[in-house]
Length: 507
Image (cartoon, rainbow, N blue to C red; front, side):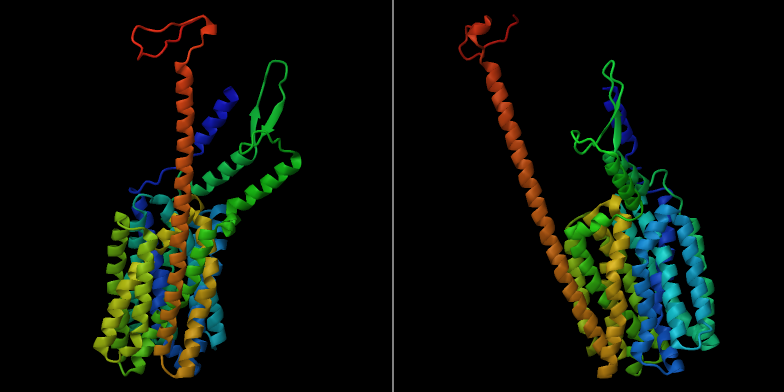
């Protein structure tokens, strides 16, 4: 009995530390805000460099789009590596290293002699640094917030649009003043601030990673010392099946599995809901990044001057901020299921992109930019929250890495496919049509995920009702048996009132 109490006490001690939802969590939110801005905000603003690089190296739209495409794909592919390194080392050290890598990559890219060198520096190295900074920071934000997680994710993601609003005209000014090479050097220096963001990441006393590892060890090979007088032997008992005694081979397998799970939770691959949501991510990534890359060139092709074209991204960024904050607040109210809200916003976003080729003047493009920014903000403010709801917060770190890895194919192929249609059709509007179709297809996977969730909830409810009914029947049987007293026991008699039950008596 003492051993059982010790085991129960140990399992209670291994419970995860509650998310503070305040206090130092706001500094984590600030760090995540800046990381969003200096990673995806820079990617969205890079369309200003797009025209200059294309003209300087005399390449095609498809060739130039590979720079952003490689960066986005590297972010997604390297995300599981960032999650594993965060578990092995610390979130802080990984983010600081990532900030140095992306800053160095952009600075070296400023001296590129051809587009291939830009692929390796501004594309690959910069994307690798982004992965090492963004993934651990977002994971840490999920650990620090629970009750306010939808709102926290929405506020942190506004860094992307606010920095886009600031950086787009700033990049155009720097290009006009120092050329695109000088602007890249300044951008590389600016990205050193990611190292400061990493310094803000103070770990919780017991993170979800450590908690999960301890729980796996406890479930796999918990040792209970059983003593019954003369027998003082030690018996290993598996908590999942108390009758199964593990041998040395099973123990080695369990230890290996524990070590792997410490860094990568590969069991997520067997989670049907997670895989369906990942397929949504693939098709959504096809349409997420192409519009931001081609909006400025599309406006320039319609005769809009440089600074007015750059202002379109700023207009989109302003409405993007409002969309993230407002719809993040709506998600926090739990008026509807988060996955339903995400499905509606994705369909609206795809519809807005399909209407883009109809705009040709600056007022029309400004209206499109505002609508696009609003719906885009409503979409990205909650898609990470839905992932946490699908897999749970304890598996969120590994799930985010796997999700980004699977989504990498969409981020890699989206801009080049759009660029291919643009080169063939000679019109930037076809890139927006491709992105809109991809987003509407991605919404179909969200509908499937919602149906799977509802079916699982109904199944759980039916099992609960059956258990409750069987338990009620057992209680009823026990109460009936308690009312019947056998005469053979030699005790008991009827009371004067025939409505009273027989009373139990002692021998």
